[in-house]
Length: 128
Image (cartoon, rainbow, N blue to C red; front, top):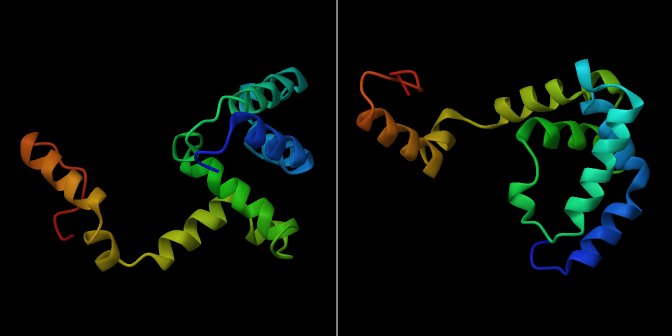
């Protein structure tokens, strides 16, 4: 989607209306669960899609896992709700990612560098 004209991305989001609505329903909790808040969020999603955003900067990891859970139920699989909740998807992604894999990432290196520059603060366990 990166590099596509904003109107094309906007049409893709509009074409996923029911999926977007289900995602909004899943992530709209607590103080933001009213119908008015959900309508506002849908407008923000549609408006954002029209601006040609960088897809890597549009969502949080939790929302991405919620979307993946919905997709596993409806679009790319037939999982039941209990095993495709965002928290379940997150857990399985963590289980699939070995410590050795994490050590090889730029994120791991950046965190270690930050820790060295900001002693005594630590983010990662010392045994990693």
